[in-house]
Image 1: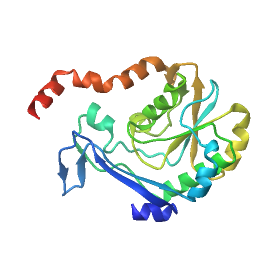
Image 2: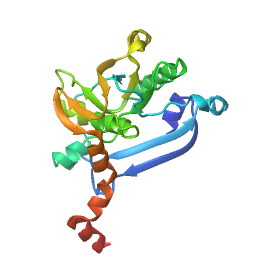
Image 3: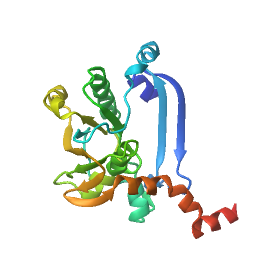
Image 4: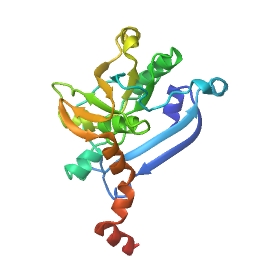
Length: 237
C-alpha cells in the first residue's frame, strides 16, 4: 500500500485485502493461488481539489448509443488467476494476474488528464471478470450494449476475460474521436467498438442482450445460494 500511495502521491485512508471465499489454499513453491487475491487502496490526491470539483466526477456507465469504446493500457496474453480460468477452465492454481506499478501509474495519470479536459464520457477499470464483464457493467445502468472486435494475435479468451491490471475502458463521442486520439499520443490504446442500443456483439457474433446479462449478474448470488452445492456448504458451517 505504501509503495502504491507514494507512487500516486496519495493520502491513504483505507486499504482492503480480499481473498475470494472459495480460495482455500496457496502453493508457496510456485506462488500459485486459488482464485483471486485482491488488494485495493483508497486515497485522495490533493483532497481539497477533489471535493471542490466533485461536480466533475467521472462515472463508469455508457452514455449514448454510437459512442466509441476504447481500451486504454497494455494488452497482455494473460488469463492467470482469472475467474474465467478458475470457473470455466477449472484450473485451481495459477500465478497472480499481470501487474506493473509504473504502467498502472501512467494509466491513472492519463485518465486524470482526459477527465480534466472533459474529453471522455465514461471510464471503468478492468478487473474481476476481465474486459467482457467490465463492458457489461458499463452498460447495465442505462441498458446499453456494445459491439466490439477482439485483437488479432492474442488469445480471444485472454482479451475478453483476462484480468491483467493497468487497463481501463473509456467512451468518447464520435465527434471527439480525432481530438481524443491526438491526446493519447504514444499511450497504448485500442479502438475496440461502439455502444449499441442493447445488443452484445463480439467479432460479428450475437452474444445476447444487455437485459439478459444484467439479470444473470443481478441474480448470481441468489441462484448460487439456492443451488445444491451451496446448501451443502451452508449446512457444514
